[in-house]
Amino acid sequence: MQFEMISTFLGCSRVNVDGRIFCSVFTGQEPVGDNTANTRGYEVTKIGADPEVFDQLHEVKAGDQIKFVALLKKAAGGKSQPYFVGVVPDQKAASASGSGASSKPAADK
Image (spheres, rainbow, N blue to C red):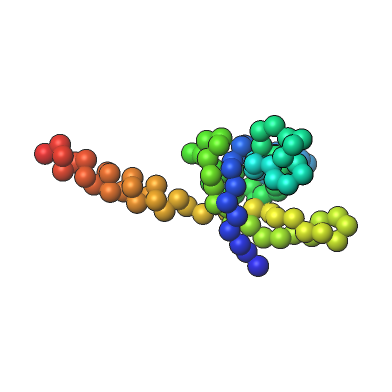
């Protein structure tokens, strides 16, 4: 089952190991609960991702809020962890750039 997960993007890396490509996304969040007193800045999390996610993040800057498409994968100890399979396109930015592009030529005339 897929779900959407909003995270503060910090970085992304892609590596090739013996012909297999692996991707990791680094996210940050404000500390909560007991961690608040013992943490400065963000709590950083490394989350596995499909290699295609790397290509989908080409215009993203560190600190941006990104909505990822994720699924849960089995992890050690019978636990599960998120795994990113895609990035949800920013609808507001897409519609704003689309309307801005169409209004600019009209203003130049």
